[in-house]
Length: 362
Ligand SMILES: Cc1cc2nc3c(=O)[nH]c(=O)nc-3n(C[C@H](O)[C@H](O)[C@H](O)COP(=O)(O)OP(=O)(O)OC[C@H]3O[C@@H](n4cnc5c(N)ncnc54)[C@H](O)[C@@H]3O)c2cc1C
Image 1 (tube, rainbow, N blue to C red):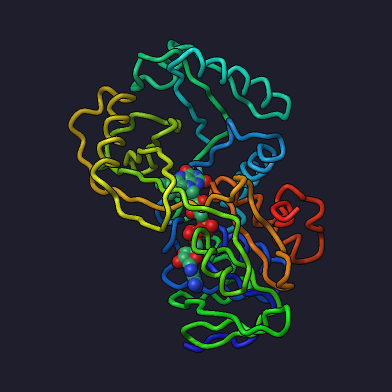
Image 2: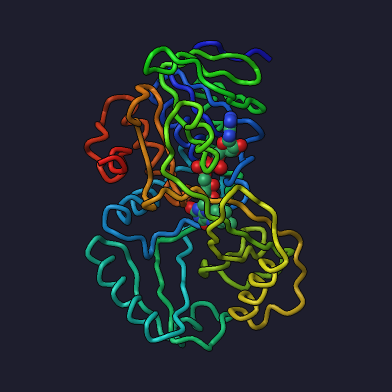
């Protein structure tokens, strides 16, 4: 199949960020072309836990971003015409020490000021909500607003809706370089030909470092590895998310919560990682017993150097923008519309200085 040779907006990356941004820009009437070197969800979005986690997001601006995203998730299935198994289930993180309890009480105070419903539960209250969880705790931080999704269905929902608005989605299309015209990108060179683009948005997650290099731009991000383990389907043992585990709509338990600083993009699962995840799951769910594990996966998160999203223009190259964030599933319903507002001139990046690239250069 032939590629479009000219486009208003070219988006690099078919993960949740690229797909969400493509959908939001296309529905505003711009001509969007997305290129993805492998398949949709072929990067980190295909190795994720699928939580929409807002309960302890800090500081205020970042908590507000996540809160806004969760509010928009409420209507997104209808908007996209896609059931992506969104559940606003609520979430718990277990507190095991006095320090953790003090920390949780402080979070409750801070989040209440901006309208995020969190509270500290006693062990008995935890037991009433989720009887399968261990009683050997001091309590739990409980957020009512957190939720979860099926990541593959969500991203494909964005992609299908973007196509209905005229977006061209090209999988198997790898960006190899850029043809420059002074300080602008004239065209994007791919393995399937060259595309002239008015604006290039790099939403390639952790792979953005090498793409930014091609444009002579530094991506202020670093990799953080994580992994998950998936069990066979089983009767429901938990309805909420527990920091470290969620049970899918189909009944599989997806568990494992870790963040390893790594130097490269190595997505291999290790025996040590598997052991750690399993021992934590058995600690939190003492009755887990003889359930079978059907698969495990590791992925590498894109982590902006100050942990906050990087959205919009970069210095030096006029039409090269970033759309980078960690927790991209949690943030997706805020980041997609924000990027579209920037692209369509409805918002200036100066209105969100905490997410502008400039903060790294000043
Ligand atoms: C174990 C684990 C659990 C996680 N759990 C959660 C969670 O519960 N909730 C949450 O919100 N977040 C979670 N995250 C983080 C979340 O998965 C990421 O923030 C998200 O997937 C990033 O999406 P993205 O679209 O920015 O990047 P990606 O999904 O990595 O997409 C980038 C795409 O760009 C493509 N690409 C790369 N180079 C090129 C090129 N040269 N040309 C064309 N295309 C290219 C890649 O193939 C890839 O598909 C987790 C991450 C891990 C690893």
